[in-house]
Image (cartoon, rainbow, N blue to C red):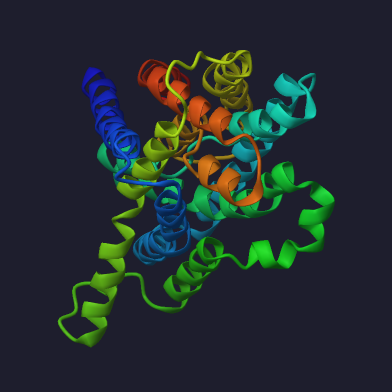
Length: 322
């Protein structure tokens, strides 16, 4: 277990270094505001869908359909608890910071951080859990999360547009293709034109995690020097890293008495719930409004403290789900 804790801290440390590179690039004006925005769009609309599609091809169908359905349900639990609990912790704030703080509190980094950690520590089963939770989280991202920023009435009127986003389309397409094509079929290993195409898609998808961290770092670099940690940031950090993971873990432990899943699946879910503010928050705020400086500060602070809190929450998950 000590090896796993150190591996998590090491992985998060590497990602944090990429974030620092983005910060330096913005401070030295190598990345301006326009370039940062374009890189964010490239990450969300191109690289991330490629990553999701390829991973779905490789994962879906390798475990029983009932088990996969339960993993999708875990995504509903994770995001639902975060949504309701996040509002509880920020409900008394003024309207403008409340929207951003609610989004940050309610939106754990369910993919970019957990994906490499799950692959390293939990193998194929942990990876499948992260990616199937991602399918549910995509609905949450482009409906509820956008609704927090834009207002739920506006989001409902344009709901179809948000649901037909590249990330969600890629998730559904990957599931359908994997279900219709034998999962043992080696898509990427082929030496013909199809194989080259899938390898190209895989290469583009592999840029998702470093590019998202680079964009987040550039957003942090736009914050004026000498800033202090905002009171709202402190509250959102406590909610995101302490209270909401603990509440979610308790809910998962209660559900484990009725739902039979491997211990690795529950442990991976606890890890996802413990994650810092999702890097997608900065991209959403760029596109749909909100306090960009506040969300960048929350992302930075929670990512720093997550190096301590995430391994601690994972230890709790290992103890509860053995």
